[in-house]
Image (cartoon, rainbow over all chains, first blue to last red; front, side, top):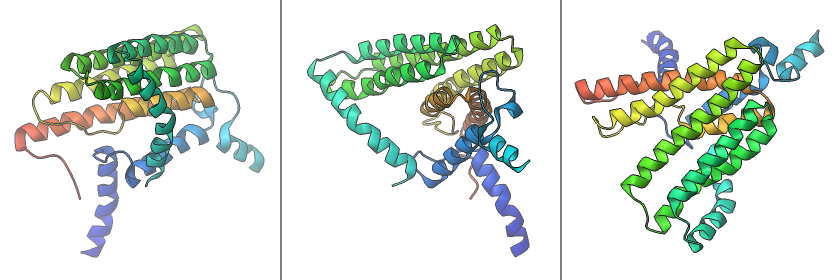
Length: 67
Length: 200
C-alpha cells in the first residue's frame, strides 16, 4: 500500500504541474517561477543555439571553471 | 505573503499614483489601451533591430498603460462590455507585434529554426486566449494553464533585459502548448462530465 502511494506521488506532482490549476501568488506558482527562471538564466545559450545571447550563462561559467 | 505576491504589492505603489493622475485628468480608459498598443509596436521595432534593453524598457512603459486602463475604467465608472472587448483585441495586437519583431530579427540573422520556434510560440499564445474565450461561451470559467498574458509579458521583459530571448521563447512555446491542451481537456471534461480534471 505504502509502496504504491510512493509510486503514485511523482505522477500526481507531474500531472498537477502539467494540468495547471493553481492561482498566482501560491507556493506552487512561486515554485514554477523559480524553475522557469532557473532554466532561462542557468542554461548556457550555446546549448540552445541562442542567436543573440552573449556569454555562457551561469552553468557554462561553472563548467568552464571545473574544466 | 508569497514571493511573487510581494513583488506585485511593491509594483502597485508607483502605479497607484499613475492611476490617480489618469483619473484626475479623466483620461478615457480605451485611449490608455490604444496608447499601450502603439508603445508596444515601438517595442516590437526595437526587438526587430536586436536592441533588447531598449525593447524591454519600452515594454515596461507600454504595459503600465495596459495595466492601469482597467483600474481607471473602474474608478471613473466607465467600464463597459465594449471596453473589455477592445482591451482583449488590443492585447492580441500587442502580443503578435512583439513576436513579429522577433521573427523579423531571426529572419535577418538567417536563423530559420528560431523563426519557426517564435512562430509556434506566437500561434499557441493566440490559441491560449482563443481557447479560453471560446470555452467560456460554453462553460462558466476556463482559467486553467500556467502561461497567460501577464506571465508571457514578464518573460519577454526578462528575456530582453538579460539577453536570454531564445530560452524565453522556448518556455513560452512549451508552456503555451500545455496551456492550450489544459483548456481543451478542461472544457471537454466540463461539457461531458461537469467536473474539472483534478488529481489530489
